[in-house]
Image 1 (cartoon, rainbow, N blue to C red):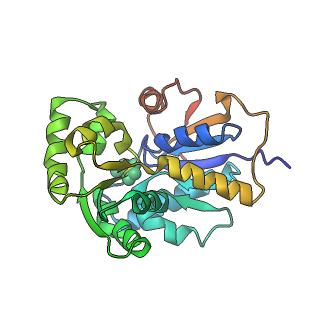
Image 2: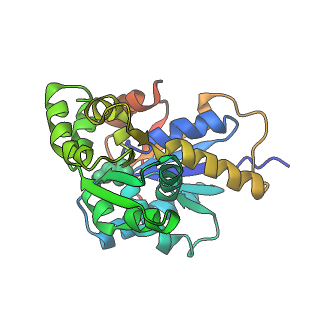
Image 3: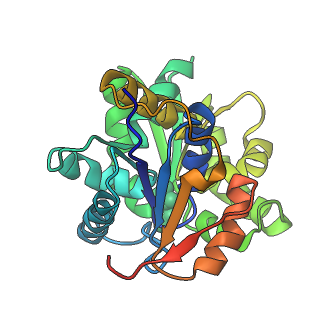
Length: 269
Ligand code: DGL
C-alpha cells in the first residue's frame, strides 16, 4: 500500500533545507511540506521555553497539512523540544541530534569529539549527554558559534571575515586534538569548506542531514508508510514560511541548488 501523505519538516528558517535535500535524495517519491519560521528566526539565542513553544506551534501547523512524519530539522529545537513533543503526538517525530550523535560515535577513533552549535543547543547539554551515553569514555568539547547563522543567511560562505571568525571559534577545538566535529546546526553544512580548512582533513565533519534522512526512511519502511511511485517532480515540495517568502525562495536556492516554487506565507502559527 502506498501512503501519499507528506513528510513535514521544520526549522527556524533556511537551515532545515540541508535536511530536505537529503530526504529528497533518499526518498524521491515522498511529498514534503516544509515550514521555515522566518518571522521568529533565530531560535539559537532564545530560551528553552520559547523554543519549545515555537516548536509545538510549528508541529500543529504541519499536522494541519496531514503529514505522516515530522522531522525537526533544527538542532536548537531538537535539543530542547524533541523529548517533550515526541511523547505528545501520535505522528512519529524525529530530530537531528540522535542521528548526528550516532555517526559521530561510530567514526571517532580517539573518542575526542567536538560539537559546534547555537547557544541554546550547546547550553542544553543534549549533545554531550547523548554522546557520552552512546560511547563510554568519550570526551566532548562543545563550542557555541553564534555568528555562523547570520553569516550563512548573508551568503558570506567563504569570505575572509568568515574564515577569521571560524578560526577564532574552532582553533581551541583543534588544539584539543578532536578527530570528529559535529556540525550541530543545520545551517553549518554550508560553511563546510571553511570549517574543513581550519580543522584540517584529518578531522571528520559530521553533518546529521544524511543520517536523519536515513532514519526517516527506516521509520516509513517499518510503519508501512512509504509512498511508492508517482511522485517524481519538484511539485512534491511545498514551502511555507512565517515571513518574507521571496527572500526565502532566493536563499533557499543556495541550500537546495534549484529554484523554489510555491513559497507561501502563513500567519497562523
Ligand atoms: N537551524 C538552527 C539549528 O539547527 C539554527 C538557526 C537558528 O538559530 O535559528 O539550530
